[in-house]
Length: 426
Image (cartoon, rainbow, N blue to C red; front, side, top):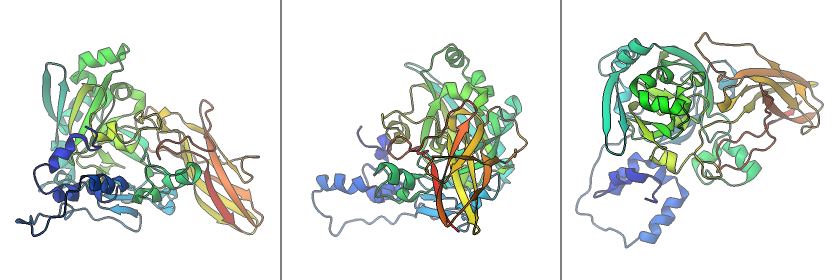
């Protein structure tokens, strides 16, 4: 029960644990694993009777554009987007968007002799509800869901909870990422895109009428658990999915095209304003339950300093580029409201550690969509006077006056949103 992998550890029982580790390759990177195992060592195995020659679970990984992604971990594949790619367009291309996989890309990510559009519509998702003494299950295809409940396109940022790990460690000290490849995350595990699919707020009440009615009446105990074909899973509160303003969809398309293998084809949950870890990819099943998922990514990981699961992103702004002449620094970046769904009303930049501030220009950009909330980012720019060199910082303010803090609270390495900094030399 104490193992962070929860019941998944049973996959390695009764056989060669190396095969288990080849799938869940975090065991090769996590600093604590070796120490745990050393306490249990009883000796070294010599001349094993049987050697298992298993297929490489990563042999069929998709091709990636390494000019537009910076690799953090090859197995499981994780990457971030370079600043130049992030700042260059309002919508982040699929080939540039960061990837955070927890295991190999599953076989379902490749259609079998069909176009991606046809395969996505044919994909079936199992919906179930569990209780103390009953379980009910129904299976629906994406085509059936969208035929009955429609299809919406929303615009939203997606962000890994560990984005800006480098800055977090510099500002607040070592974190859970220290000593792992993820301590190198700068601010590229984020992107902005359109996501298309059936709204959870439209179809969940039809599938779970009693629970949804109870939730609407104030019962916050229900969670919706998503399970992916890669054995990854997690949950979000039902309350968040039922609020139409939160724009949550069972997505089959990104930026108007079918999802790519790395981003969850044929279908993924997409829940704006929460860490990307909750938007489970390669969705196979959806389950309504009381309380959070028992998967390790809800029970052990992605929790704040108080050990409460993180279900909302903070207000954020980033400096992504800085060009200088002898007298002027041209700064560009992005800002977004996080889990509030509120628009960013102001981005300010300072070159004297916050003593004085200049308002940046917010670009008026939007993708044609059906969004009810303001979960997409806004790009901004500013020309500031420059004499020699200066360190610039930025902060965002949302529609109700909440302003980004200078330094974020310590949250185990997650959801850092202190002022973004960039040093510029003339």
